[in-house]
Amino acid sequence: MNIVIAGAGAMGSRFGIMLKQAGENVILVDGWQQHIDEINQNGLKANFNGKDVTEFIPAYNQNDLSDVDFSADLVILFTKAMQLDNMLQSLDNMLGKDTIVLCLLNGIGHEDVIKKYVDYDNILLGNTMWTAGMEGPGKVTLFGNGSVDLQNLGEGKEDVAQKVADVLTNADLNARVSSDILTSIYRKACVNGTMNGLCTILDSNMADFGDTSVANPIVQKIVSEFLAVARAENVFLDEEAVIEQINGCFNRETIGLHHPSMYQDLIINNRLTEIDYINGAIVRKGKEYGIPTPYCEFLTQLIHSKEEIVEAK
Ligand code: NAD
Image (tube, rainbow, N blue to C red; front, top):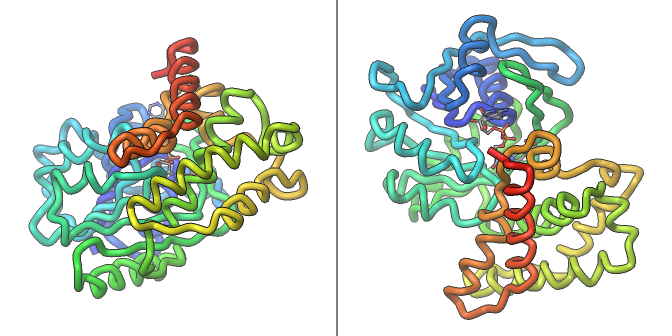
């Protein structure tokens, strides 16, 4: 299958490497020139579960695709949320009438952006439990296991979703077709919408935040805003189960000592965050539905304030 990885950072590189290793015809499209040059000159390098691997996958700058002759069967979107619109504009020439587009970004509401460029029937929404880290240009770290859930937006397109899931599973990416992807997306957004912003603003790992006397009431307020908006979109989640999942992040024996990815992006690397597509999306949708979202709004504002203070780019 001809596959474009659109956004070849940490996660795009993981999917690119694993799909290439499974024999798919893969190209990478990205906006970071230094990363692209490194990949084209020396290959895409990964510490893959402790083993060094190098894959030679052609990489192109999204702003220079006019001469690229590649008829894409599948585009996998892995930009950061704020880069998505620009990436889709750049890909315009590669999106044929049968090109399937799978979105695996974290956050809520990406389908509203994608459907400006892609036929509704060709859009797959997904959610992934895989992780990946960027070491530097041309180099990523890939540890652990994961899975992908995906679903077709267009009615009667389950066969298309299954075909894509089969291609991913053949590359050991463990994909399955879901019948309620929005529930998984909202559930993950609740975890990100609490842990990411709070630990970033509080300069804390998840366990230390979890041990504070106000962790539970703050988490509860934020989750209740997410779930109220989800309900307005006919997505129903069990509040107790969501909170239990978030409480799992506080466990020092498992992942509690980690800082969430937003912390790495903003505090360590001074990069802009995806807050507008997590808590910020809840604020926007809350306004549409007449649902108050003061905790999400305040957290979004605090993160933007921090972005300005550290001059994030
Ligand atoms: P990433 O930051 O590694 O890459 C996203 C884009 O930013 C790529 O185009 C990349 O080239 C560019 N980029 C990265 N570092 C850069 C730098 N120093 N200078 C300039 N450009 C740079 O993002 P990601 O972690 O691959 O995440 C992509 C999407 O997947 C996001 O929506 C994220 O929330 C989601 N996600 C990530 C993980 C994870 O473990 N990383 C897990 C699940 C979902």
